[in-house]
Amino acid sequence: MAKHTPGFIKIVDDARTRVRECTIEDVRRRQAAGEKLTLVDVREESEFAKGHIPGAIHLGKGVIERDIEMKIPDQSGELILYCGGGYRSALAADNIQKMGYTNVISMDGGWRGWTEAGLPVEQ
Figure 1 (spheres, rainbow, N blue to C red):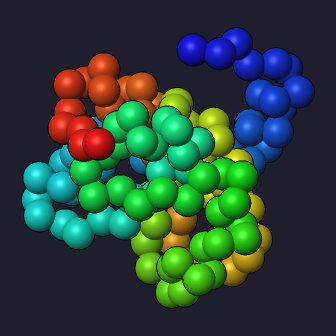
Figure 2: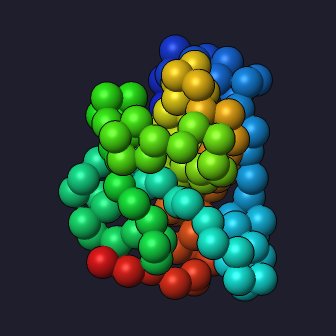
Figure 3: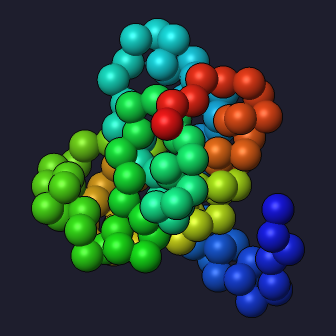
């Protein structure tokens, strides 16, 4: 895992004051209950290609603000964003909320926590 700088942690902590978060277990429990979730992987394209949560769509943090309205036009539908550990997804969630998306959640623990828990992945 990359060591995060104080400036980066500061902006992530600020974003988290405005963003709802869930745990990996929350997502897994909802999947097990048969809920259809819109999972958005905000990692880099190369990270997504190596593996992602089954059914996730890719909208990298670098382009999510540019592309989300075309890919996901419903601004009221629930979106669960995840990244490597929950930092980039919090920043992306904060930004798309500013664009009018009203039901955005960042999955704390991200891909790293998902794979460490031995949960299903796809490539």
